[in-house]
Image (cartoon, rainbow over all chains, first blue to last red; front, side, top):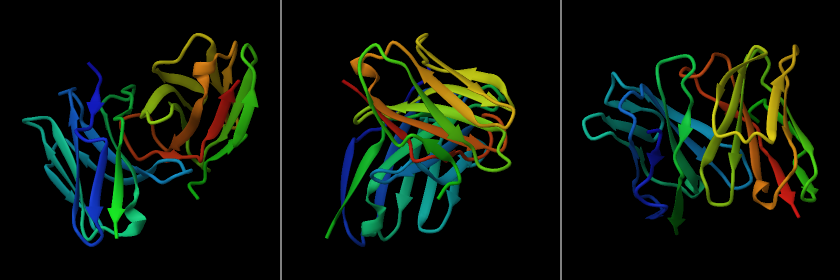
Length: 113
Length: 114
């Protein structure tokens, strides 16, 4: 069925360390995966995306890894900063025009000083 | 600033009432999406329009309806409101239809039903 879930609802990371946020998806037909960041009081903001024909994609301080075998997605944030404090959502969708974008429940990232 | 404008930002109303939430997409974006976010919950997809036509439907209640106008702005109508309808309602837009491109979210309309 359609479900995107996250392993941990809250993650606490020391400032300067790397953060890894995980996500499991259940729809093997999903073709496109996106990570969003939602800061308090704001709407979600696109971070990075990856298509199913890739297993890794890098952005500025962020890397998304996709393991289609186990239907797992992760977001790695390098040198975590206080401004990274937010809720992070993974989302999935298919390749068809009418496929919905389904969001997971989110992981709250706390940055410890 | 994502370029997506939602009004009102906050709305307090009573059970049984009807409200309309409005969304103006980014300039040039043809697709508009509506999502509901309850406390500590993820984003629940409600409905999507593309260039004035309904493109996809999610878990949208029959009491809710939406439309996209010729100028591409969209409205989400919520009627016979219940306490459980209290939530943040987000609108997002994208250039293309579902399955491609990133979504640009507005800052949301917070609905409180008393």
